Image (cartoon, rainbow, N blue to C red; front, side, top):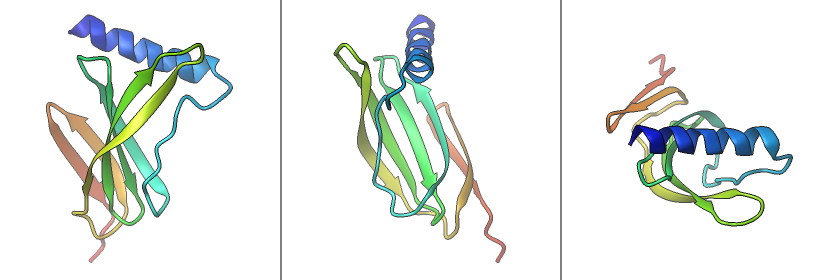
Length: 105
């Protein structure tokens, strides 16, 4: 399992560092994204979490598509609306999501 995680991370790093074109995109937020977090999965996919300035957190599954220029396809898995204001931090691990916001009320 560790070898799969390392391989996936290396592949993502290679795409980011070597490709002048975007390696993929995700879009479903209606407000600017404030922070992201993610982790590679054993099957070679990646779980990505994005959070915006309205407190909406979205969970994505990224999967690499075959081809000469690697691209990652994002599929929206879930939307969480538990914050009232912008999410400023996401920590994701062991199947849990921890988030922080700047709600001053």
